[in-house]
Image: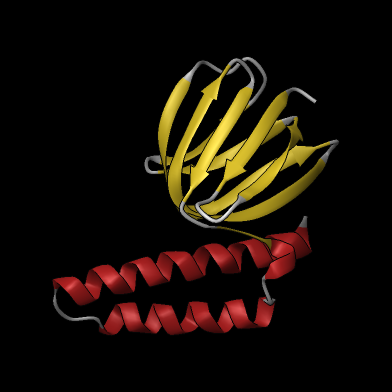
Length: 135
């Protein structure tokens, strides 16, 4: 293992461990991190985070936050995080479809912002549930 990963949420430390590689959902797109990555602080968007350990991928839903990468230590401060084991795929699919429809129907700035956040959150949960079946 090459990277020491810590994911912290306001409620509790969510995940601690080592990994060979991670893929983060940043505000400017996905960002991969390998051993000896340049030091960086980045904002995290709502999305799926991937962690590779021993050729196996683990998928987590991250609901925004920040990541600090420095000297092979990655510290993630997330607003919320969920693992695929805690997401019912059928429920996630239904939530995603509902959020998608609500986003299309949203009128007014406030409603669009709220609908967009709900859409991104449900999309991340759905992606994680689907990826856990496919990886």
